[in-house]
Image (cartoon, rainbow, N blue to C red; front, side, top):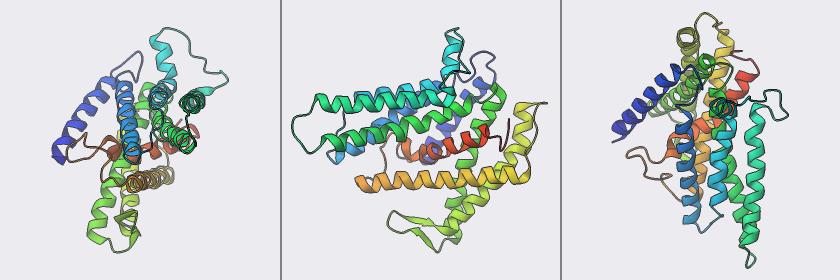
Length: 299
């Protein structure tokens, strides 16, 4: 079932990427619905895990915030589809829009807890967990939209593919190196199967995948305007994404351990839940965005 689920996901995602690559107006329009759907499903998984431990933050402002944050990150696309100019030089900047939505959503979460307050003991905890869900899902996933809309259709698509490919290659490399060579436990209590040898293998795999992306995939996607970054820059990019991805994987392990759950849900047979698939990407996305906007690997 794991292979079937993975094949279906990759096929659908590949088709949407192909459609997005051919888009001449409103680039990102085919992938934005995927981000929104994943955000809703991931929100449901987090709230479900919290509910199992009798934590019940008010759900509606969390769902709404986690929908509006990736939409706000996609403001240039939304403005283009609505045929209104996007204020590139406005006070927020591209990354500031989801941050503004986060602030409003956090205030709303606290206000919703005020509205249902009856007795002491749960309001502050539920408020904090609601804001945690907004940050962990809505804010972090917004950076995938920001990466997709970086510079141009070609550069943005390449940047997004690089994040997904390198992070998942790092996951796969860590798994196989860990099985073959793993001896030293990294976090015996939090994630008993992870080893330092596997982590090293994941980093090496990510660096190799990063070089391959920038050496072969970049010229093919971007075309004549492409300039390949140095080997040091592409390797550093791979290292950063691998380390961030491992942090994201362990962060979700922490959440599941604390809530005493094996998988985040059973949405995907053989793979667990949505969070089990995107946990590493959630943390890698903002790191990748910083690498791109600071010019480490591209314009």
